[in-house]
Length: 392
Image (cartoon, rainbow, N blue to C red; front, side, top):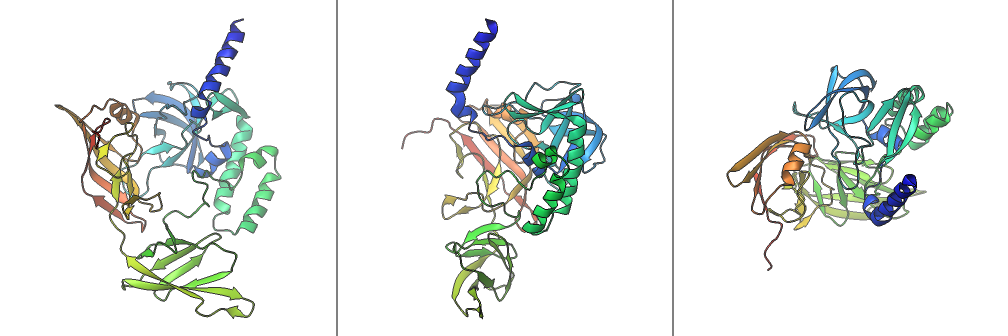
């Protein structure tokens, strides 16, 4: 009878909360493997408010000079929670990334919003959390064997054309069904847009602006086979877009677009005049649409984005937050922490969840990686928390 009521409760919970639970699309394990730079197996030997400390038994992806790894803890939220609370003694397989390679300040970060990056190990099995508390069990020896091959595939397929990548995949897939499931060239894509090279700016022919000494992505719809050129610039053709990098000193530059036909290029088929600008200083955004007031839920992250034509960019300008100091002033109370990634630590998130109307958040000593791979310091930014703004 108790089991019957438990099942009824679970069914009712899923029914009434199905929209909430569906908000976050959990990553498949193959996607976690593809996006992670590092993978290590070990045991949690220490915990604090922001990090867990993993005593490393072996590195599966890319060895690091650490016997114990300090990794940012996963923070439970409405659409994702860890399979079980953190505890010293837990043995697990962890996939993670480094927040940046540019400055000495960095964090090791889990990937994904549902606790997918940590596979708990019990006996000779590893458990992957595919949706809330639902797990998939893998034989640990078989999984480690596939992961070693997955690393080989990640290295070997770099820079290869799609046909060679598919041939390489077939060679790995022939080894086992688990190889077929876990070794893919699929990555997680929030937007559904094509997987594009990092470090390039998204543009279109309507934008009329290109940034100097920076790869700009140009999308051209249509079935025509095109050839693009720029007198003082470089053009690289990709599968679904073009990379255009102006390097001249002029403020304007023509992009020449030709159609390819059987007899050759159609001369001067189309020319587009672009303004050539230096990379602008981005704005600091904290869940606030670019304003100085925070009027929604307490923030959980800080980003650097360029505001274009009084509209918030949609992530097309890939500035990357490297490190910053965040201070919360509430009356006579002052809370200050130094962070090394765009997302807040659990400690800072907990502090943000206790913001009061009128509290001041100050962001200082901000280091940002520009799209041209240079590091810049941004000026201070202040945000006022006012969850109940006055009516206009």
